[in-house]
Length: 512
Image (tube, rainbow, N blue to C red; front, side, top):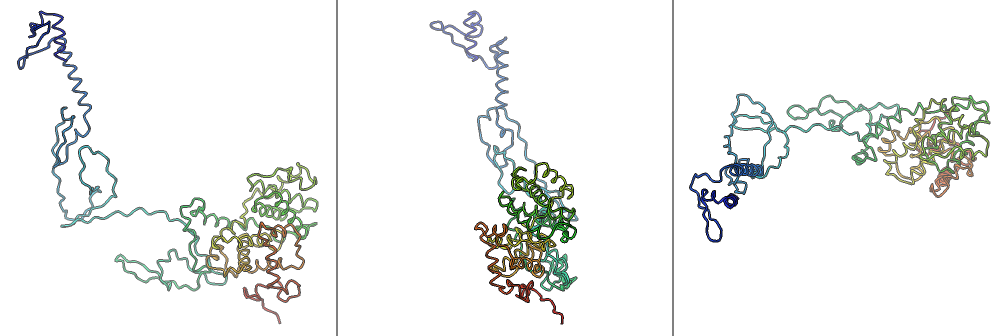
């Protein structure tokens, strides 16, 4: 570039070319005489311009240098020669000698420092190092003790509810938070600072819990968002706490002037039929029945308005539970034009205001699904149990039992019909009821099945006699007749006590 510029300027001004050391040769060409060392060449404006260009090029080359050129190579490693080495390099800093740790007079924890066990990387490797676990180094005489900090404690997940209390009349077991801290005799094991076990504070177990020996079935659902094992215990504890607040008065028919229990049974059978025709959810039926009984417990209703109460309750339950609720005209069509749209809407407002808009009814089917987990989700047992639980919709004698007890009694009696074995500790734990607590409710269900006047042509009986429900109503009826044939006649001495006579409960004392 410099020689080219000189040739151009010489060609433009021949007199200057001689002063710059160029001579003519041959056919108009010029050859340059090599300037001596230190001689100034290409001065003037062109010289300043070339100097500026050289500075810019040098600065650009310096900017394009790789990052590794500014980092001092590791000790003992050979530095690679690259094109960037032609550029001006940064002066390398000598590595400072490592300080030797002096043992203090007393053991003192030094600040945490990361230690790398990998080999030193090359000058071009600038990847960030992985974070290591913080360590505390305790320096003692002639040795260094590394103490790893413990990981932060995780929040313990509730996998199942605590052991339920013993049966009424038996001394309850003391609450043992961790079974691993107790030996077989119930003595608490306390670990001292030396790690030796010492038997202290020995609480004597006067009686075993009714669910003694149960296993945690929620542990396998850990991490499954559909099973919500972290919240299932709190959810069922809440539902059991509001059972009493949503139960009707079991003797409300005494306050009704025009109604009788038989009329309630006819209304409920009609509700079951409408529910089946609309193909509503099973939970909707139980909510509607609960609304009817709670409303009749609070208000006196005439016989003419009884059907309107049932229809309104089913309409409100559908709006509360169903995804797609049938319209008002569909419900009115089931009454053959007996009521108008304004009547059912007015009855809806009146019913909800009477019940304080409280729809938080713990459904028996929720408890049944919880118990089915301990039963292995047996489809036959659960279908028969649904039939036995739904007897509470048409049988007024079951109004005094809580929904959780209805579900447990239905499951127990269904397992008895299908010969599924004993009531295991897992079933006791997940239902919260022992076998002795279920006999009264199960006996009323059995009495309904063994009733000589049982209407087998009712909508409720035909519903569960279908193939969809595995003909569970006809099966239970045949099982009861085969197991207790004398009770069907109605002249048996053990009528109403069949389960006790079969050895599942205590017989009542006979007065002399």
